[in-house]
Amino acid sequence: MNQAINTIIVDDSKISINMLENDLKQFEEINIIATTQSPECARELILKHKPYLLFIDIEMPGKNGLELIKELKEEIDFDMLIVFYSAFQKYLINVLRVSAFDFLQKPYFPEELDEIIKRVIEKRIEDYSEEIFYSAKDKELIAMPTSTGYDIVKKTDIVMFKYNSSARIWQVLNNNNKQYKLKANLKAKEILNLKSTFVQVSQNCIINLDYVSSIENKSMRFILASPFDNIEIIASRTYFSKLKDCLSTL
Image (cartoon, rainbow, N blue to C red; front, side):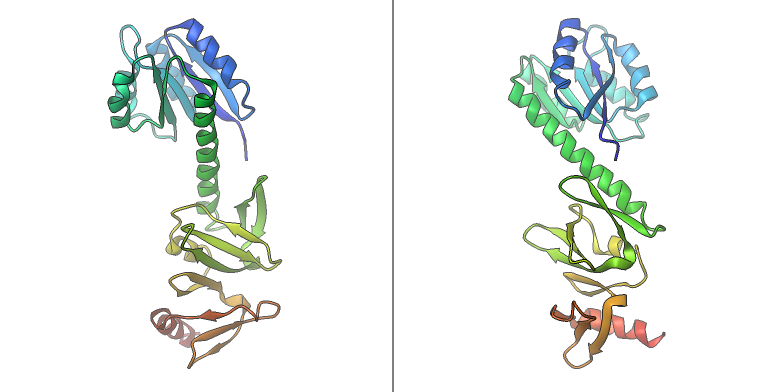
């Protein structure tokens, strides 16, 4: 993953630009690709560079930041997190209406900027994970997020997916007993589309048929190949009936 978060700063005050730019330099993930004091110039820079993060002042002469973003709405066909900042909190409602990522009030405290950048980094990792996951449909390898980056995993090495209802995420068990957490809001059908041998056996379980050694018809129990044969997997009646129909055509 390219860790750099390309960033543009738009503010009619050069002093404000310099201050924010210096504060952002403490974050190694942030890459400031352009700054400008002109709303007209900002339009060109945004469409040309397609930044992932935009800091834009609201009150500027000629055209304010809110007006500029509204005009650009139809032309922005890329992911961009917008952080409006202003000395006046009265703009907060308007900022929410244009689906801004956040609002930073001048003068800001360092911890306020820290919190915003932390959320930006988390969102970038989540978005990148989503890009990798969806691009994996026709590929054999998937990048699984870890605390330090990504593990490259073969689809054939995935034993099963279990849904963690308390955390509301799908978790992966690999054949080397490693476990991974997938992105939030991932749907079961999106997992099933990745490989034909991924089948859902219950609301909270998707298994790879390549690791199933036998199926008990009466108990609807799936027995996995060793060393995973100690994992208890009982199919729900609805999914078991669908699976039997599928297997009977093989």
